[in-house]
Length: 373
Ligand SMILES: Nc1nc2c(ncn2[C@@H]2O[C@H](COP(=O)(O)OP(=O)(O)OP(=O)(O)O)[C@@H](O)[C@H]2O)c(=O)[nH]1
Ligand SMILES: [Mg+2]
Image 1 (tube, rainbow, N blue to C red):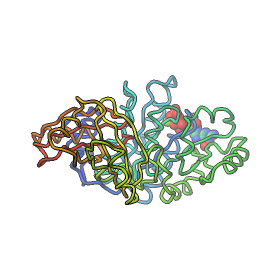
Image 2 (image 1 turned 180 degrees about the vertical axis):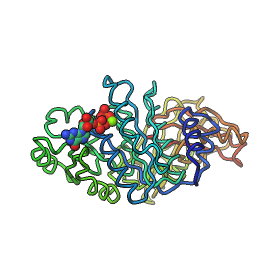
Image 3 (image 1 turned 180 degrees about the horizontal axis):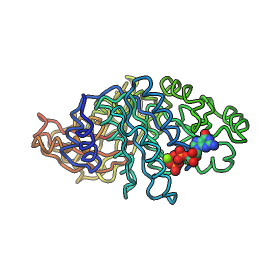
């Protein structure tokens, strides 16, 4: 899908503002092929300078680039953003580069969500690369970094304890360590320390001089995706995650009575819990990419208890995993579906909603959103 820049800019603003129509449009767009690259690290490490240099190198290869600068307005170094703007201006007149800064949102998670949506939009718009600059110190930034196909963690010599200021978890998701400002003393030592502790590729850059940029571009294009933070197994394109059946929920009178049959098939419960909100106890049995969820009522007035009384044990619901629950909800509303609740957080921290069987052809449908977005 190709948009002209003005259309893209307008859509980006609407998506950032959570406009339901724009979210529905976004959800309906087919995915593109963009490589989503996170550039993260402590304040002043030279992230913007690197983004700028990498953009220049990619443009010389004829690649189109979107730059999403997560604008840390809550930070004190107000001059940095202006500095970024001035530097980025060299690309501004270039139609192959789309630049957007994303302002800090009030609620935790809002920034990550807005950034993920914009990255997805840039991907759908056909960009070859989406570069996302964030300061690697907050939870939002950690989430954003973990959305990328590959994350460059920018470090500088002589950081010492400043490395500790980087949000725990950021180092783990690095696909590349860039020791920027390696024209300054201490680069050797930092490189030794990194190589001793991590298997992640390390390279040195001097962003202001354009040194090491070609090697960085090469690594960005080839570095393997690190294991996602919360999700377990590596996913090659988290932003383009497919719809899939997350689990089938089966209502039973007693989990303990039902389990042996499943266990003799090799399905083993990895997780059991009581969900107070729904008045149920559940056992999750992984089955390949999907799972079976056995559900028993934990109180007589539980909705599952009523289901059992009325229909007897059996298939209770089908749960689909979707990339953006709000967008899905907007589309379902528009289609006239009967939603039993608005998206709300479940026990595992994920968002979910239920669609009434009357709208789905007869089965209760649960929609679950990927945890990180
Ligand atoms: N000596 C040296 N200075 C550099 C290098 N890269 C960037 N700088 C300088 O470091 C300062 C900060 O660079 P930025 O690119 O704004 O750093 P940043 O990480 O984007 O900063 P924030 O967005 O404010 O967190 C600027 O004055 C740059 O010119 C480098 O490789 N060597
Ligand atoms: Mg910057």
